[in-house]
Amino acid sequence: MDLLRDTFNLGLGALVFSKEKADKIVSQLVKKGSLKRNEGRKLVKEIVKKGEIERINLEKGLVKIIEQTVSKLNVAAKSDIRRLEKDIRQLRAKKAKR
Image (tube, rainbow, N blue to C red; front, top):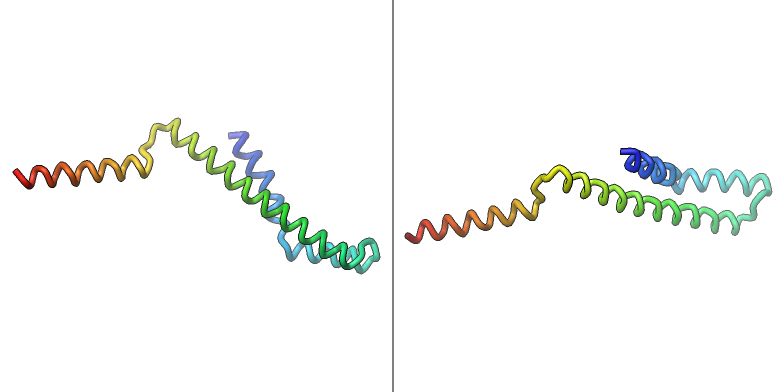
């Protein structure tokens, strides 16, 4: 559970840091003269790109954790249920032919 919490917290920070928020902070830095306008645009793009990468990594990590948890719980997957439904239909069809 700690891994899930750590993964979530790591990605959450990047997700919360939206493009609008990055634009606002960078605009303030440009106004103060701490950053040139073209550097600011580049920085915003970099922040947004890193945020998207973090979002993707978070999603992959969560999917992996969920799959591992479901596997440990020994719960039927959708593919298992679909296979069983197909088997049932085939058996019913065979029975109907008799």
